[in-house]
Length: 324
Figure (tube, helix red, strand yellow):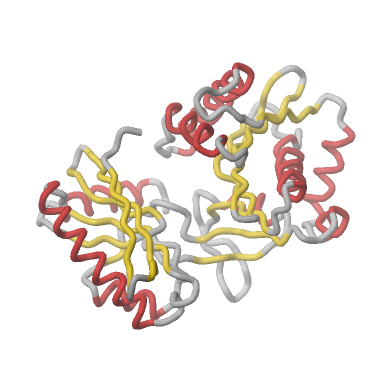
């Protein structure tokens, strides 16, 4: 996408124990350094509190050097560390604070798909199972699947499908009031994962009109529902349910053991009722397929300049305005 990046490996006694991708983001309210999903930790040592603290401290010193050189006003880390008191304390003791917005989903919904298709259907909410079977019986509903394989250019039919998906996706962004990824971003994502055949684009059609779509990534034995969108023209046609079920079956066919539905709204631990949230409807849809919640540490910010606080207030206000 043209951003300046750095890739770091952290070693201990000549052993690679951690990795981090750093991206310089040029925003209107100031530039910052973004670490998506970092730092990644060695599976052998990642459970040790002392080890995680050492890794973060070493990384911070390097990031501060880069931040000063690049005139960044803060460092933003979106880790995929489990949400617990120890991990929260590590970041707090290193000078971080919770970011006013999230970068990646901090609460996700996952499904064990090692079971048979029939068992998966029986594990779903009754309504979800009924709507899938209803869609399967509707001859007017068709699901089209695209599997890009050229790492340099998208095949013509896949590019056309992506353009159709993006129109639906852009329409959804207007309704839900979020900033969508650019068309070039989605195109580059397809090209990047096409190198190993790890991505697909599904479109759902009803009466000669595309009403829904999704982009799915298959990596490390997990299928990810990474992007999705639908139109409201035929609200009683359960096309999105069948599209999602076809994606789950595709993940199974590829040998995946889990299916990650990506982000969901906060859920009460006591009674699993959904909190008031813009994602409530989407969360109910995802939960209907069965599964369990997985929660990660919130995005963390390390201020490097007083200008950070103006950025904080703007992002905080936008979050409140959107109802998060």
